Image (cartoon, rainbow, N blue to C red; front, side, top):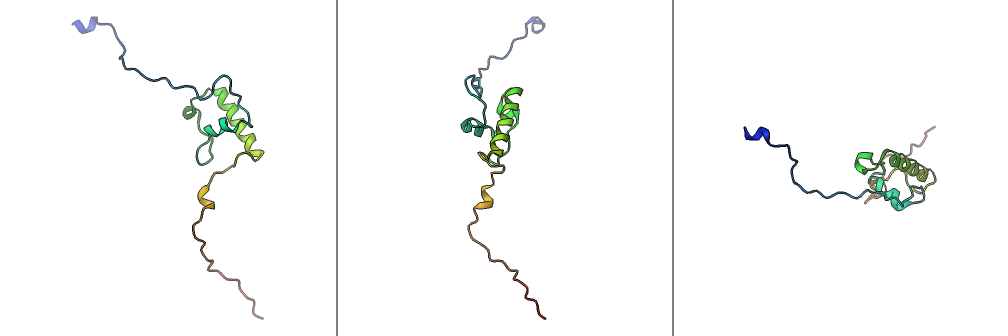
Length: 101
């Protein structure tokens, strides 16, 4: 009976507030590679707004800046390091056919 009269209280757990990834002084521009590279995954994909913790307007500007940097060859479209790092070259088994006449 005493429980029903008790007001609802939030738990007293402390949490650390995360700093926003983009400060007010940062310009979202295709030339600002240090800022843009934070919003790209290891594979070269643009990370989602939920992962980045940015506003909708900031996410749109980031996406446009990344696409402009890719078109101007400042960023790669794909970031596949495994494709270029082959340890041993394998010899080709197919040989050229000689035409017999």
